[in-house]
Length: 300
Image 1 (spheres, helix red, strand yellow):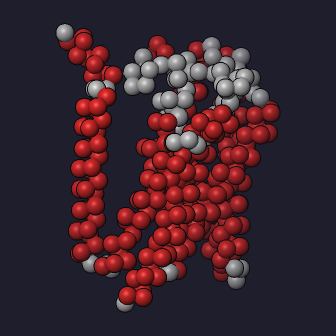
Image 2: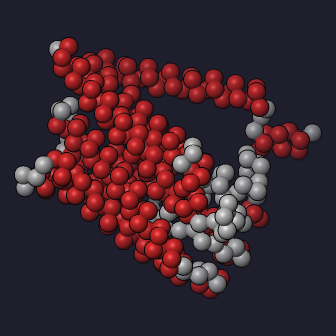
Image 3: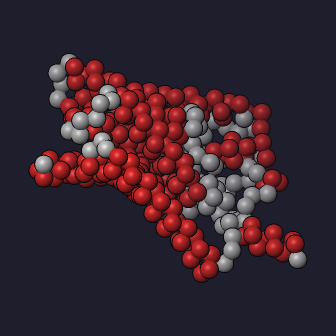
């Protein structure tokens, strides 16, 4: 029993490491492709007279697109496993095929969006497609590999009753949700509107007036990744890694019993309390949010 728990925790540690990498790469991929909260502002910019060189795909919401990528990778991997390929080879090929399909969708989505903006004189830069699309495919490939590897370990070594494609679908949706919740703030809120004080909100009249000058010439999608890799990507990776680890370790310790469910509720309660304490401390240290200050001044 002790040996089983030890092996299970070792496998879970590997899954947590893979999840951390997957979360980081998922966020950075959506940043390089502008598939995040800032996407609407990039799409609106030409209509406001602000032409740009930022990739603008937004195939769908991040949870849906990464759920699709995950299940595609998982299905191909299972087919190759049934063909007696080595698991690592099967996972790599499955992730690669899904990444290529993802790249096709990204290219057509960006080209279609830019074509729709031609009436506002927004060019379709072919060099952007040439050097940005491989970056999108590369980031997505690594994320897909990690997601399917997690599903494979979960199915093979932890004995979960669900098939690999279904597990990959769930983890793909999960990493997309975390990327939207954690990583986007450090792209849309900070990168696209660096000429505004953080926390002031965005007046409707300022919609689409994104910052387009980068550290070296015109800003592009690669600049966004350089910025987001400092905090947004790693924060998303840590969020997904913790989600995988804290979700599965009670099952490894207690099994499928009520103790596991109770432990899950306890973990959620502790995280909520810690989040509230952190928020209160930050408010006391740095003051209220900018919106609250503006509201108080308006009432006064």
